[in-house]
Length: 301
Image (cartoon, rainbow, N blue to C red; front, side, top):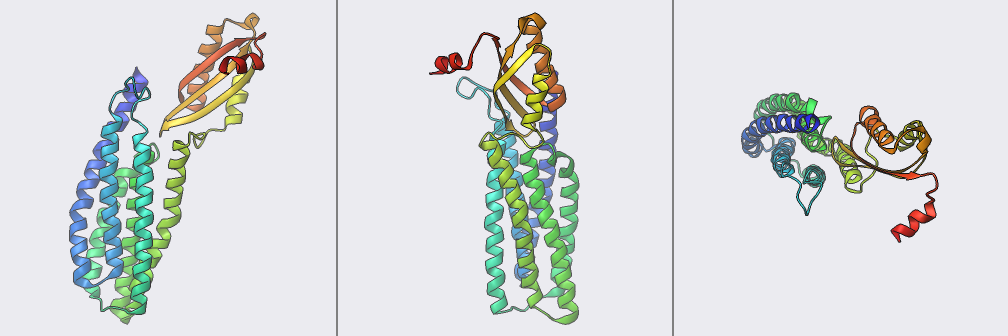
């Protein structure tokens, strides 16, 4: 009960931080979009576009948390926690789209450079940087505990780098008049985002494909189970994650009754998996030494 209560408190903390970050991001996004059109800066428009995806990512993350709160039912016995992973994957795809759009626009601008108001560009970018830094501070701790929050954090992180790039571009244009640097910075922002977006998408897909969670070595888990007194063999071992921080394991154990009761073995293995590997949901089937794999296969058939 306490573990579930703590998990709920963590999610509630994530939700509060996301609401604050959404308010800050959305408010400044409007000002930045207007400023991008006034100054004519593609780099600033790139930063504004990323801030827009920040706001969308934060909103989607909040929706995901609300959906994930729904209790398990007879149709979805594990509940709705995985919706958060779907949100993280969607955020990654959204970032891919924005990055490619900015790269295309940067190429177009390099062919026909536009006049840019560097002073306004600099002021707006500096304000944007302040907002990004505040949002990053809010989300940094929670990003390590939730892929959903991590998706939002990565978008704010990339936008922060974009703001720095825009500031540099504005200063260069102010002192040299090199308008083409605006498009170069916009393209650099796009290229910077792509590998981090791919990492987020890959992590999300690993959860959706029920892969072994990051940070867990299945060979180490199997060895730890085999080292438990009374466990003779381990087979049909599966480890996956419902969502960030909710790891699941199922396995069949062959046990020797002389070294302890089945219930004692189950209790010991379950507690060990939770303490050493942070696996919260464990389903184990204990089989006697006379139970062979072919009998198990016949039962499944």
